[in-house]
Image (cartoon, rainbow, N blue to C red; front, side, top):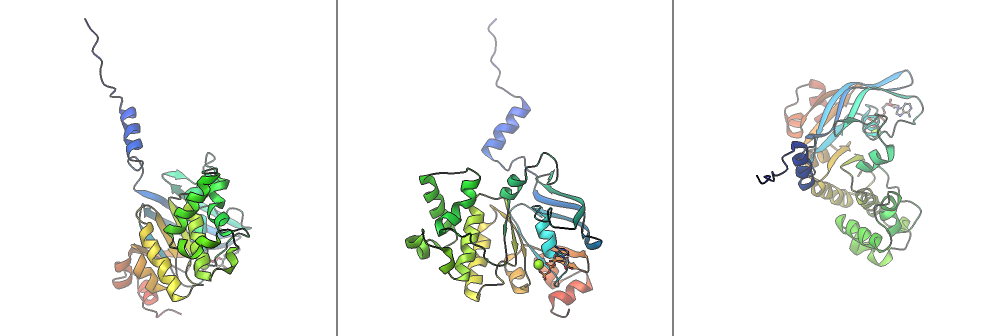
Amino acid sequence: MEEVVRPDVDPKRIASVLTELDPDANRPANVIETSGLNLHFGTKSILAGVNMAFARGTITALIGPTGSGKSTFLRTLNRMNDRVSGFRHEGDVLLDGQSIWAPSQDLLAIRRRVGMLFQRPNPFPMSIKDNVVAGVKAHGIAKGKQLDVVAEIRLREVGLWDAVKDRLNESPYRLSGGQQQLLCLARALAVGPEVLLLDEPTSALDPLSTESVEQLMRTLTPALTLIVVTHNLGQARRVSDNTMFFYEGRLVEHGPTSQVFDNARESDTARYVNGLMG
Ligand SMILES: Nc1ncnc2c1ncn2[C@@H]1O[C@H](COP(=O)(O)OP(=O)(O)OP(=O)(O)O)[C@@H](O)[C@H]1O
Ligand SMILES: [Mg+2]
């Protein structure tokens, strides 16, 4: 009898084909989760018991008074605190379901997947173009002529192309503060991160530049997940889907932004979002 050729129905094979067709198919819905996360500097507890899930493709705002641990929390998510003197943690941070501190994790790979934008623009001392492609080169993502294409795509993406296309080989330090921040954003986007951490990204910018960064943030989702620290409550309201409120060493409350701002569960949250605290 002739042998019947059966289609390959190995479930593992099907899963892998589906994953190829849709890279998100088998990924957890939450790109980052923290569980029982305690953060300390030396003997001082900064935050205790933070359990939080960041859904893929959303924008989360981190708000709270100065010193409430927002930056410490944010910087923990891509292990920026690991080498800070006195920093300790308990609990875990999961990236796509895997501990960021697992021995199998490669720190460079984590930083590529979870990028960061700081409060003050920090272009590198190299040309505008080289700034955009610095990470791309370091990670070996592209080379030669491809780098020009990557630079153009990313500069267009952040709306900076027309302003800089004739001075790609010049220093970035003559750009305005807002333009420098957009350049740093282009650099962060160029390596194709999944998550972008932003620590008060517009606090050093004028209102117009702030508006362009905010608009851009919205266009980056749902492809990216953004987590943004801000003292600008209007900004948190405008750009974020979810809000976390930190106060006195804890995550007091988190939820959909409209709920946290208009219908807070905790009185401390209500006082803070209504400008009645400190
Ligand atoms: N490297 C460090 N060593 C020791 N303590 C630190 C260090 N960095 C921050 N802290 C302390 O941790 C606490 C939280 O600081 P953090 O910078 O996370 O607050 P924040 O909410 O970001 O404040 P801000 O709104 O002013 O930026 C503060 O008491 C701060 O003094
Ligand atoms: Mg801070």
